[in-house]
Length: 396
Image (spheres, rainbow, N blue to C red):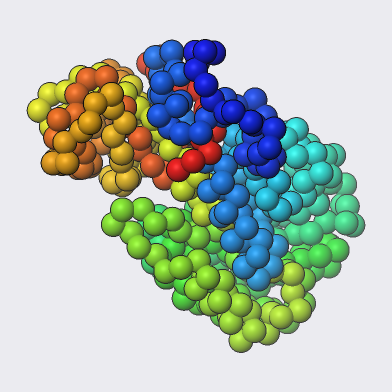
């Protein structure tokens, strides 16, 4: 897919391990990657240094253990970058994710935090060393106990349904979680059958207010008091945000500080504290390079769309940051464009508007930024449009 005569890196051997993901073409700049590319599809870009910096933020600042939510971006290179950056635990949801993480990071600690799992997934997980399992109802708890043969070394995590959806851009209320009275009963029944017992919750994806975590912690504290049951851990879930256009969350340090304060106020100081960032670890560490195939006024037809990595740009109308990479010096004048993806489906539309130079034309490349999370991970091969090309770029 790439012209071998095009220079990539002069001295790759001097780079840290996380700058040289196994199996990926590595370039100094996006322009270098575009110039070397001979394929016809979009190009997915990983920025190893950005991912490593985000991981370091959590390893150094989060008041507990950090799990990476693999669903955000399961690319093996991402897993290896995070491992090299100090992330040692991973939140998985399926047999394939279990096998993927163990293949990329054999010594990783896995947490199966999906509240509803197939029996085969539970067995496979336990056989492969997984001891952390989430549940949110008596039936799921029963499945876990049966499929692990009533193992005495389990760490079970009861998923709570929070009473409010908070400030999250994508509330997760409704699908998972035990409500208050049911949670009381489940805590009491689970305590007698497990070695370690914990609570977990999720305030919603792209949470914009750190206080949401404090409110969730207070809710969990009231539940524990009413149940009269000792717990061993508390999992604050994910929801840690990325600064997308139109969304300006507080600094990540504010989230850590509020969580730490909530832990102390609620009397959880002696518990194992867990967090499950996904988007926050890889969102700004990836982008998509897409080529303009046709321009009609302020409509741009691209070789990537909502059935590829632009699902949220279409379905949530998120206006991701964009940059033009062209063969000419673009005008400084910008206008708003609408994007159309390459499929025959008229739903393959990203309304934007996305501000780009007014003289953009066929053949120019657009970098759609902050797609490291839930971009490539959601891409399909619908209509035969699929990119298998991922590169690492060292300079941003």
